[in-house]
Amino acid sequence: MFILLNIFWLLVISYAVFVLILWLFWNRIQVYTMAQPADLSTRVTVVIPVRNEENNILALLGDLTMQDYPKNLFEVMVVDDASEDNTVQLTESFIENADINIKLIRMGNKTSSSPKKAAIEAAIAKSEGDFIITTDGDCRVDRGWISCYISMYEQTNAKLISGPVTFTAEQQFTDYLQTVEFSSLIGTGAACIQAGSPTMCNGANLGYRKEAFLTVNGFEGVRHIASGDDEFLMQKIRQKFPDGIRFLKHHQAIVKTHAHQTWKGFFNQRKRWASKWQHYDSIIPRLMAVYVFLSNAVLPVSFLATLAGFIHPNITLALWLLKCLPEWLFISTVLRFLGKENSILFIPLVQIVYPLYIFLFGLSGSSKGYLWKDRELQ
Image (tube, rainbow, N blue to C red):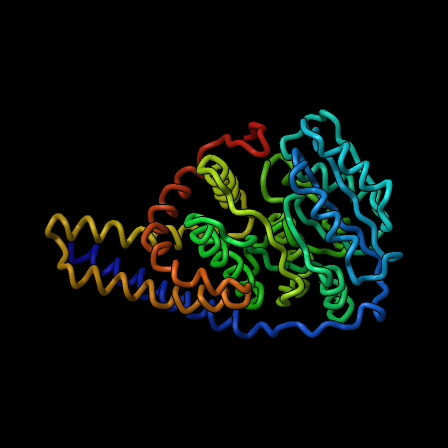
């Protein structure tokens, strides 16, 4: 037990330092100063892979018609992946009256181990833009969204730019918990990019130079993996352009999506995300996944050890505080940037369940099969 307790202290202390380092790097990211949209000149293609988004697609297309970026410099490509609802019909009707360039690509019933990657590649093959921005059909974007990306791209010559994602207004208890958990992922991904070791990004808000995508041969080598249209591409671009990754910290760059309303939807999304870690070529993301898993496992194991009488309750309390206080500092800072101050009070509740969450999805990520958009993928 003495050796195990020392391992606990080592993991928790190092984890606390790790989270404080993330907090420092997050704070080093300056809120970006945009150029005026009229001064920008890059041609842009916005790619939206969709499947069964009849309840959401019109709101997103409406947001895109309101962009302050010059309308003659961007196009929108909606790529339909065999929707079984009215997504296609609604999109076609919207296109008829739109004052921006919107194209609909229908993938049909083509078989693919990674439908989203196939949709993105199909759009890029027909795109006219020099810079690609991807989002999802259930997202909402600010009117300065495109301008934020292109302003950073033209000023930094970044090859890939990761943007912030959060949820729409919370309606129920579980929405707040998801907001807190998701903000920690966004903050961690941003901090790691700032530190020069990019590990995470989100395809709901991602931009990259078309030439960079073609230079790394797109999704070649990872097409067989159902998930990872975002992070695997980022890793490929990082290997070719080590200094070419940026995080776009600006309030108008925030993309909002809906929190999951069912456990089934939440479980399948997180299982899909967790399944990626074992496919990374770089050792750093793999080590980080294992390290975070072990560090979070300390709390439930120490709690059980306390119940069994092996560890004094004060030690367990000290381990808990040492892990949770730096997390509170880091996550609350990210939540404030995202405009989610009301979710800060829910951080302790997330910290209670998060170790079990990490344990569950750490194990489930090693098993095959999950549902994505009502489709079974491996």
